[in-house]
Amino acid sequence: GAVVSQHPSRVICKSGTSVKIECRSLDFQATTMFWYRQFPKKSLMLMATSNEGSKATYEQGVEKDKFLINHASLTLSTLTVTSAHPEDSSFYICSARKTGIGNSPLHFGNGTRLTVT
Amino acid sequence: GESVGLHLPTLSVQEGDNSIINCAYSNSASDYFIWYKQESGKGPQFIIDIRSNMDKRQGQRVTVLLNKTVKHLSLQIAATQPGDSAVYFCAEGMGVQGAQKLVFGQGTRLTINP
Image (cartoon, rainbow over all chains, first blue to last red; front, side, top):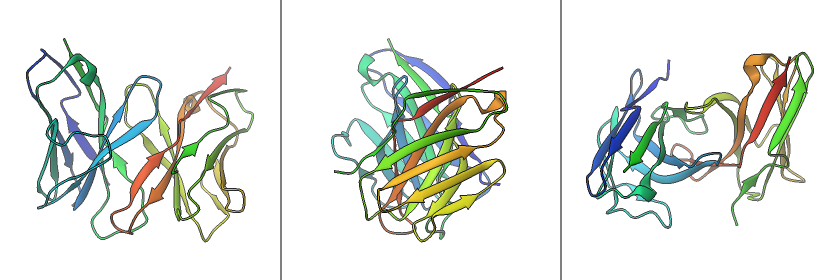
């Protein structure tokens, strides 16, 4: 159990366009999901906390108008990279924790490799 | 500040040997720690976790040790196998229970030599 699915796994887009990434918890409900970004050979950097039915909480330095997060249901959160630029090229990974469980591991999707040309 | 760091960026061990990966953290208020394994092009995979009221926890071939006095965390992998080759991250739980976010360390690349 505790499977997190991310789609697409890879996407290439042109500068100035927007890209939407979906994160689904397949066999559990998640009130909270987390979006991370990872550069090559680097660690995961938390971008924002996605809260079902309310606004996302962004980490310092992350532009909320650039990275739009919507958590419309207990099993789906989306990250939209708006007006993408080449520097937005990265590996984006979402994660989720089963609702109601405190100190427990986050379950991660397999990431989305975004390339902006 | 809040940080979770690792002493060694790379580690090579012979197949069958034991390996130890270390991690230092700076937030003494953190009460939950996790080790993840990440293979190339994939998301992190949970290995083992430990709460701050414990100093040792064992799983299958893995042991996590927590030393709160010196804010140090380690992952021991016994009888390493080729499939253990990956990048290992420690992560530190911060925030209110149920909404804790995880802050990741820099990662250690473990290579198992045949």
